[in-house]
Length: 484
Image 1 (cartoon, rainbow, N blue to C red):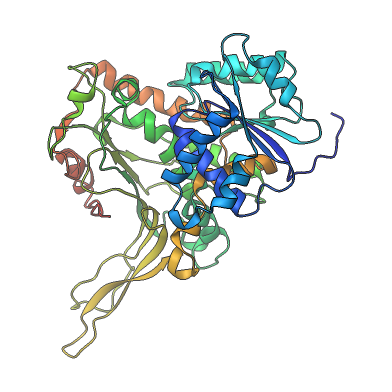
Image 2 (cartoon, helix red, strand yellow):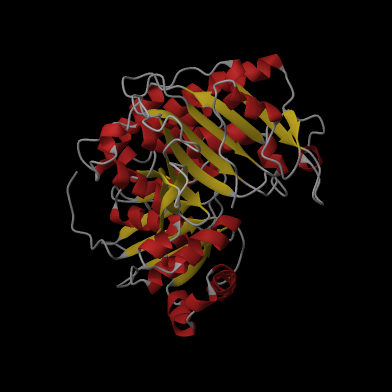
């Protein structure tokens, strides 16, 4: 390929599905914040594309409303908003037909980065990719961003990969997982690989077990039709939680390089053992707290789709053999919280035989809310009366530690979109990585579908099904309490 010089700070970003919910809530407000931060210099432009027939002015008004609703008031500068809106245009387009593609081509400029965000249903990925290619809109230096779900099983993921590969190389495809854009997730790599304190202890010899929790208080309201074809396993475990597991379990890459990092994540996925049926708990929330249960929102009143799942996962390699990873995620739970808790083993010998209150050291990496980390350590309880131990956190909330306002911390989508413009794929999934994750996931889903068992019911506002507690208790462990 002949190289050419492209100013990396100037781009045309086309957002397909620009009138949709994701664009309104995350993409467009995030781009405005990046504009405020000075990351849209020069003549960079944003082009909205969707089926709706509207003018540039009408679309800009939609963007204005989105900024007013989803950007903190303190960041809403009237003059900046007007300048930002001046960079935005719109083209009505038919993703499966011919309408609008000629107009879009005329809007494209040479010698700038061309990025295309597919904020649409996966069923349209192939149609858009084909038309971008056939109309000469995307060139060999263009980049496309595709949202999850990337397939619903291995066969469909392979089919999607094959469709995209007909028109784009792997280096042009950015499969986005917003969890990887979170500040804390990236800091997990920094904590591991930039501190000699942790890496020597990061193995089964010193770590008893790992818990990964993604708990939500909301139900599937408004998403019943989608969720009933997905469930917690496909919606959360196969992608978001798999990525978190990989970052915890991966070996140090030779360099902080996109393919080096993704090579090590792929090795983790391929080292995952099949999950035994007794190590899986599936649940479905009941009506409560003024809202209907899962079945009230499903199109199928006899649905066996899980809104909660807990699994015990084993990584069969030298570093992790014997250290279980416990994963759980669910809707309508007690609190909204996403965290990784790494529990270290007991000291081989305690000199405090008569001391009370001993607990394990735990490194907690909190993704939401209030991103940060804390390390739970044992100290002597102040005061006389003998050696009484107590557990205290060495706490690092990012807003406090870095002196930053929480509103100043970039949203995951902001960071990832800018990585697309810069051509940095480190935090994006590669095609073989996606397929390997589905190859592990498919047999688990097939096994419970063959059994035909209904998910266990659990109360809205609880911590999930009772059997999820037993999943830990039988191993002499317990889940961390879910709290905001």
